[in-house]
Length: 118
Image (cartoon, rainbow, N blue to C red; front, side, top):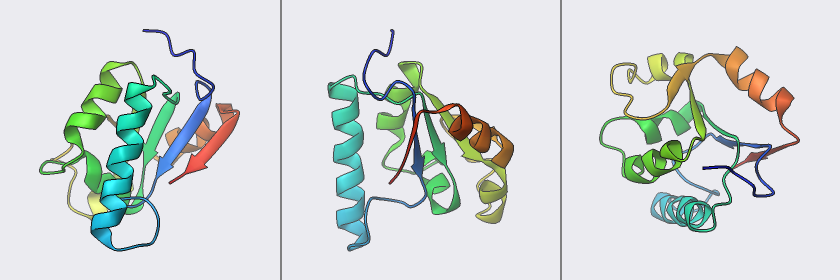
């Protein structure tokens, strides 16, 4: 499926287990709604990068795996920071996306017209 949205040359950075700085349950609810709306509106970015605590979202047991799998199936690259996975001892628990390094994340940012940090 072609991604013709205005976000098609955008990189989204997910650095936490949710959105904002509120209570954790609110942060997760907001991120879940954001990802659901991206899918429903077919407003998908070119790449979503996960680093620092954001890598927990792609690991076994995450409540976001179904949404992220739906996004990945639409051809969106999900890049996960290998250093962060190692730090949180999650290297063998990745369920979606591709494990890369900071060079991969930087490359995605350089090629993007816009970078959004959640």
